[in-house]
Length: 169
Image (cartoon, rainbow, N blue to C red):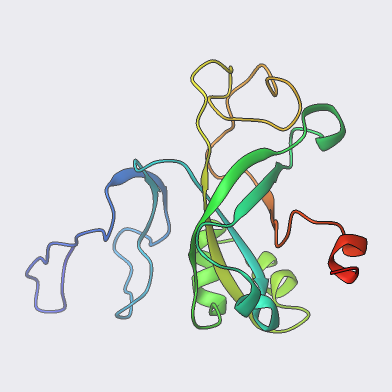
């Protein structure tokens, strides 16, 4: 990376991974903190979702979660099982959401339309016996891999008891 005086500066990513997309233009200028690349992490598979900030106090690390993948109908394949690995403490910024959704300019506005959101990371349950490599709630899931960067919907299971059971206690 070049700097104003013609020297170069080494840039390091905060995570190990593979470059999935280049955001900055070669020869262009950026400001500190501006994303240059989108990295596909090589760490265990994680789904990122957003939840209303007012619900953040109910979600804890270790809670079960269900991840719906946009290209695999839930009625046919169900959900990928997972576990909440991290819950943001502060609302996600528009810039952070844009970075996570691959630079899409419309999604951050949609995600925050009802107010501030917290970022939630869900570790997906692995299953080497399924074609996708994940545990699904219906059978073995699809006969295909889940592409990196696919749009997903994350639901956190707050309780495994029915509302009636909760009311009668």
